[in-house]
Length: 281
Image (cartoon, rainbow, N blue to C red; front, side, top):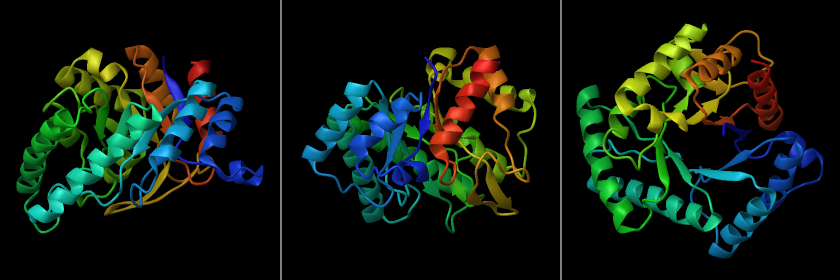
């Protein structure tokens, strides 16, 4: 089943007097949405009791939970000590995700830094093999860990790089942020065919069964020659990408991902707008 939901709480959530993540479950459900992504962007600072409490609220509403690991993960950092921190950020995110009853942990793989691109990608790939081993050792291999396509040119995370990382092991599932791809490729996503070619590439490399329920982030994103500048809302008419051609491509290819809206402030409303577009196809 395809799922739609917001990343974090929209401005309307707070405007209605809500404040606790437990309340997000009913808020999202009442809007007619299906999933919710909780961000540990600034670090995994949640007690086990809170994780269980959030998990219970979401389970009662039948809303699926995913998490986003801390933003400062960098598996291409030359320093082993820093790589250790990155392993721990992902594993701790996974541990708390499991307490919350969720299944998907999205993470940023790496930044190129001063290294040659291929050297940075190869180092990241090697470290993701180590991470895979640690995921299995920690008993977290019943979850999906989702390396994300990135919006800035200097970040590791082209679609090809993410697919390469996902070939390491089935525990890795692609998180494709189409706004990021569009930003780093300077407005490349316009037609149904533009989306289909990316999706068909993933299917040819990873197989239909693995790609069927992949993870999607979607928002319009302002970009410069260096890639992503900032997240916008679906209302924006200057920057893309548009969701409708993706909705058509997903229907045609019979793919049913989790689609998480990362619009700035209107993520719940825009998730619902995307769900309605999809249903109208």
